[in-house]
Length: 99
Ligand SMILES: [Ca+2]
Ligand SMILES: [Ca+2]
Image: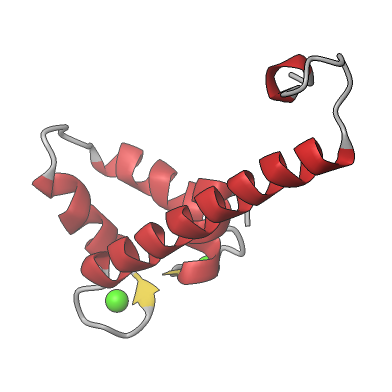
């Protein structure tokens, strides 16, 4: 892992190299976050800023995979960290990119 990012071949990660890698990771993450936020808006059909189980279901039904109600509930519960029955954007971000 360290060696992979070792640009100058000294077998150690310099501070500059670390910053370079770190910056790449950050920009990747914020790009992912933007994409997820866009996706969230599409998923949130009624625009209330929350995803209900029904909205998630509609989304999943649009795909090629057929989900059973049990599977759907499992996915939903995976997203709904605080178990309040809705998934908000922070829960979705946490689930997909780790907060
Ligand atoms: Ca909604
Ligand atoms: Ca929730």
